[in-house]
Length: 209
Ligand SMILES: [Zn+2]
Image (cartoon, rainbow, N blue to C red; front, side, top):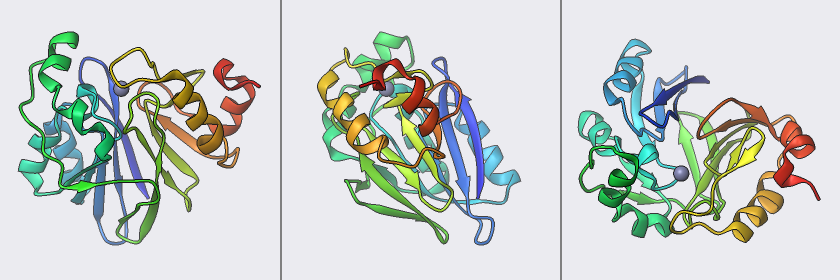
């Protein structure tokens, strides 16, 4: 599986560009900004974008989704519990000093248990409320890889003091869902460096019993 991580925008959201090397079909996760750079990578890898997945409706993760959809025709997929946050993008833009991206429309709702495919490569949607109500992670069982959005970071977890955040819920999501994954699972957080489930289980201060 092709996987390029591109930190985008002023908050350096980790945008993932994933592709099936057999079929040349691709998925982009969290196109917060720098859509021209994302399009250049798709073009140079000869990938056809089939799906735009948004882990949650914070502007640094979703800000460029409509521009990417306009350029490629790919649908936008997100959990419906974040639709209310999506209606507040102008306010979010003002908080972080970004230009408001305009309205974003979701084409398909993702929920717990949804199975997505890039070509022949499957991935499972895990609903992990806490950072936001509609936060999801995407797990690729064949690659043992997790795209974690802002739920889990190397040595930390997502903040819960923004609208829709809930500390008890993120702790429950982490313990019951993410720590259920194998230790060798590679984790790509929404910001900052990569980690593994095993490393976080052992050393993350928020995940100790
Ligand atoms: Zn966030």
